Image 1 (spheres, one colour):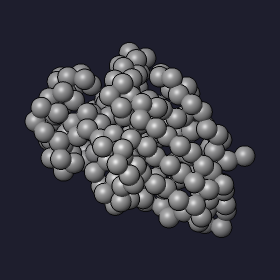
Image 2: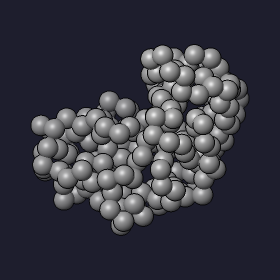
Image 3: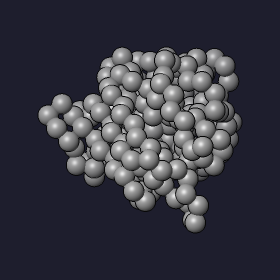
Image 4: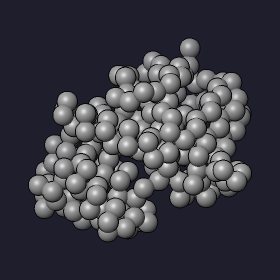
Length: 204
């Protein structure tokens, strides 16, 4: 199981603009890091680089387990979730169909899926088409993937933005439980995370 993420001397560009350079970060199991900085500073791009969707201009992203380094392709394919601004849900499926699809695609079990439905309080929404859900309900459905297919590293981009106060508290409990079980969280935020977190500023 992945227990450490190491970022060394990372530099990212967008088009002709250098977002940042020389960024280093060590994230250990049971730890959360909140990425802060102005809009456009590169927080989302950093998450995408960790997930392997953007190639860095310089530097390295490495993943480790107790017995040594993990091949990046294996770590990214089996060891992390990326939850971005867009929920990535198909609007014509029901919530049950959509969650079931993602659970199967990502290797989750029926038990994991049931736990996700309970944890995110999705039971009343399962028969509804995704297009009929509110922004907060869609975000809860997207967040359920974190439970429906457990993986150690959560990469979260403003995960609580559409959630109301009770659901933010609920997600905070989910995050703390993940950390207590040895998980890792790297989150781009404007507001403070609802769990203890080290802060890393991205950009100037």
